[in-house]
Length: 148
Image (tube, rainbow, N blue to C red; front, side, top):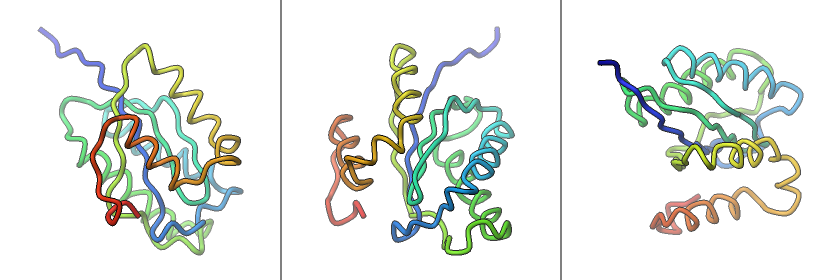
């Protein structure tokens, strides 16, 4: 019998010190690079987008890999590429930690739309407000002092 799964994760992580270091002119190259990292781990990327200080991904997760190793590979590999590429001269690295929110098949299209609309969305809400809201919506307990 084969292994079947449907494990969607909405991942969110920011740049170190929340610096606006993701150059909008080169974000497509970054997102393509991250897509390759996800694909190499036998996972599927449904949507990626972000702002100069953070990114959102909607992916599935292959059962052979843990969530923490998956996110670590994305962050470590993309960080090394960003520093070597020359496209992101002020990029220092990614923040420690990340947000990970599961979603169902019924929510997938809504989350894809949400991620696609990041530029418009952030005209009215800061990353800090958004991240706090996502944690509260998903009933995740957090300590404010460790949030940012």
